[in-house]
Image (cartoon, protein in one colour):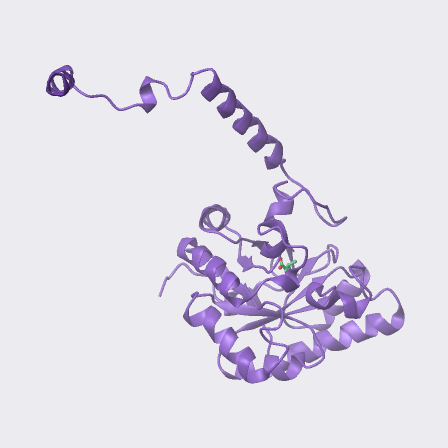
Length: 281
Ligand code: KIV
């Protein structure tokens, strides 16, 4: 047991104290850097499908790949709460399978909690997983795994009826025992209403300033993913440009025989070299 690890209980107590910080990570080096920067929650999101694996949709990634990425993250993390994102069809098809898959994130990948997106039987599955002692974070609003059922990748809850639906979903998830809820792509005033109604924290992405915390896809924040940029993303640095420049410098150095230099090369004593050359003569 790592004494420095932030717990689900601590995340709950942050509501109304200070904002909760969360980012995605999918591998050891970025998880290590994010953790050392003191971020509270690291989500091994199924967004890895888009931003790392080059897939068109998060529905294309499965359990094996998610566990592979989750394991590399938990190897690095000393402090943050690590949440494994349940991939499409790992929990929607059958509740028993959902529980088994959730347990794999905890037992095999050493995650602290799991996340699942809202779907029609979400409450039943969420209850079963929580009953088994696995902490769950819900996810409502724009749920990318079932985007086709909610009118595509659009802001959700813009009319009174759908906004009310979101408020009800949030309340039901809290009643089920979720320790937090991700609100994705909903109007800021609706996120504020939900945040005020709940005792558990809300973590927003494209849900405005009034949520209890914020999450972003790290590759968006770092400018490492260039295929598209949602309106809600703030890019803090353009690592793509920096990496391209560094790679071009390397290429130039190799072509111009400037790399490797003496300082990157290994020597052999003159005597050893002489003996070798004589033995070959
Ligand atoms: O997969 C992911 O990165 C997510 C966040 C957008 C919340 O679910």
